[in-house]
Image (cartoon, rainbow, N blue to C red; front, side, top):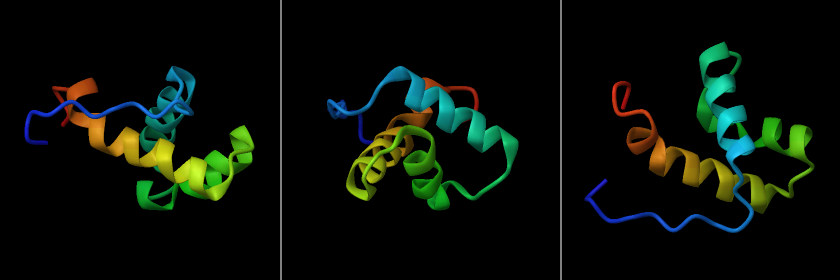
Length: 68
């Protein structure tokens, strides 16, 4: 990112980010394919799941500085 803070959508909770971290570590899916997993796990609409995933992707490096 270019140093600008990313605004966290209201729908995004810490548990969603942790779920995506675990999903990534599991290797079950490429993270671009995570939307259906979020929909199934949390009952999100497709739009909500995309918001959560986009935020997770945009903030991954700042939340995981050793991996990003």
